[in-house]
Image: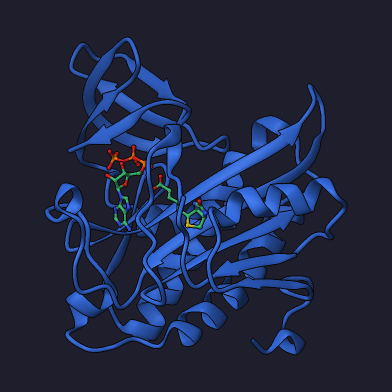
Length: 252
Ligand code: ATP
Ligand code: BTN
């Protein structure tokens, strides 16, 4: 990685041939004082995880499994902005390097041809009014040619879509440089710029969605996202509901 071209990302890198979860490792390192921008990356995760404790399939050398430690000057409620920033950076990197139409599925997935090619898991350590640190983890299926039965229908990789091997290092370096650019907007009070790019890359806005929460379901037209990463859904009853990403899943 050409850290020289990066201002704060990946100045410190922890690389593992195999690890449980880069997010868990990054949280440990952050607790022990690892600096803003620290990159934790692995060839394989044996306990890769998604939201709500779900499993993230991370076979050796087939994808990019990484986490970044951030110490943002944001309020805790603004943390979803980091997931959005990461999604924009990753979608742009995939489009640029692999030449593939990649879309953001709210709140934390990237889709290609309607299938999941990447997922983001942002975790935070904070008290009521300030963030201690944030770990944002992303998994990108790059050269996977096969998936376990339970995700065969819903997962894809850049190789499966483009028909050729895609350089993991190329995607990685492009992602890191894109992330620096959009992250700077976020820190400089220009989140509006990130939001604008997010809207352009979203596959949900202007379409019908079904939101599945723990105790409820909601259906309607996805109108927009707001500054807090909430999805604004116009229900058939005509009311506009503001859905926070927390514990919900989105279906089309
Ligand atoms: P959805 O809304 O698609 O149900 P979600 O975003 O709510 O998913 P998450 O917990 O964010 O669910 O993602 C984890 C899920 O992603 C797993 O339950 C599994 O179905 C799927 N998955 C696991 N590994 C991969 C992978 N490498 N590529 C694509 N999908 C995967
Ligand atoms: C999801 O779709 O739920 C998010 C998946 C996030 C996977 C990445 S891979 C690197 C990092 N380490 C983990 O254990 N999870 C994230």
